[in-house]
Amino acid sequence: MKKLIGILVLALVPVFPANAAPIYAFPVADCKSSYGKYHHDYPATDIQAKLGCAFVAPINGVVEDVNSKDIWSGKTNLGKDRGGLSVSIIGEDGVRYYGSHLSRIEPGIAPGVVVVVGQKLGEVGATGSARGTKPHLHFGISYPTKPGDWEIRRGVLYPWRFLDAWKVGKDLSPVKAVAKAKAKAGK
Ligand SMILES: [Zn+2]
Image 1 (cartoon, rainbow, N blue to C red):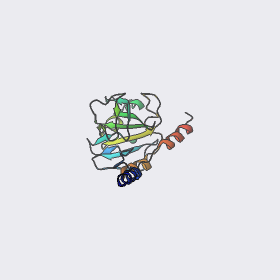
Image 2 (spheres, helix red, strand yellow):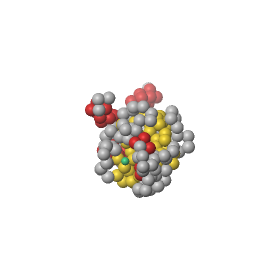
Image 3 (tube, rainbow, N blue to C red):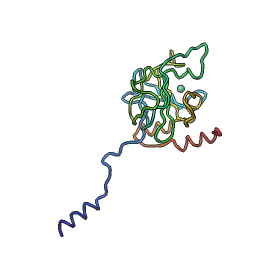
Image 4 (cartoon, helix red, strand yellow):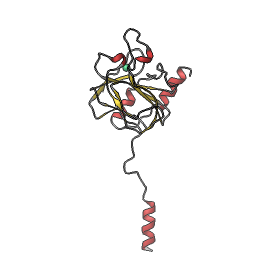
């Protein structure tokens, strides 16, 4: 009987995961960083951090697009070249996350590669149209379109409230906000 009671007690103890892994991570890791609540011309964020700071996957996902050559020129200033070195991923939440002006792309980061939250994708820099400015990570949140697209990919909403949450370990999802932006754009 005693044994039976013991088993029953064990069965009734609720099971909590010891440390539920966060879904989202702040995209700059192991470095001091800051961002103003401002972005020129369209919604996105520039996260100021030192050259070489890690740009990490903000969520589990799959690499969508990688630009590993900086061919930007002030003369042409083509939209597709402005990001310089960049990586975009499609998160498991269906949202696209984009980081650009990188100084370096992590080896092995290529389209189709599966990445996990917090995994290093590249390093903060000042490539593309950021040439000559202080190194920073341009961070954009958008709905997936097609690889090579730059106009949507660079960002469709202001990511501050999400960054504020992720910075303190809170899982705030941009899924609804992205769907709203997509509907507004008539996509
Ligand atoms: Zn920017």
